[in-house]
Length: 237
Image (cartoon, rainbow, N blue to C red; front, side, top):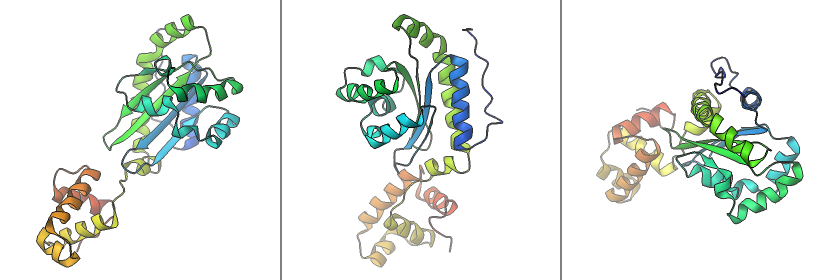
């Protein structure tokens, strides 16, 4: 394998599940990998999207066993900043449980996960596998890790910019009370006024505003109101 990877073109990629899955197939072919998976989670709203090159039989079995709730290659890798070689996870009890099943589908417990921490509170992850000897895997990993990291960031950025898929991950989940308070704020009411209108304390109003600012990644209440209007949570008076 060449030490230099021709970067796959994301600019012309069809921004659909089929397009992103096709991209992962091309990535596997260029990097001499068996399988690749991309997923992203909004840690505030728990919205999840993902694409994979795994066979349908394994995808169905994985979902039926609800392995997505325990798989260390997902949950532990997403907590990391740096790439995670799966050998670091092998001592975890759920790792053995997942890959005991995976072996029946000819999937090797040898892989690498690349986490991406995004600007909207979302976490992306590209995971790849290869069935080969340990020495071959170590050489391959060193050879492709830089390209995988660059590809992970570019792919995640492309997904986040897509009109449908990225919207799911970018859009926060505001409570009805948070929307109500932001709506009254947009109407020019003070925290004390809002407390009187809703029969709650002004301190409780501030707690909800603080939560809304956090979810909307806003530095001020005015910015939170503007973003809430832009996303359609509230309407200007």
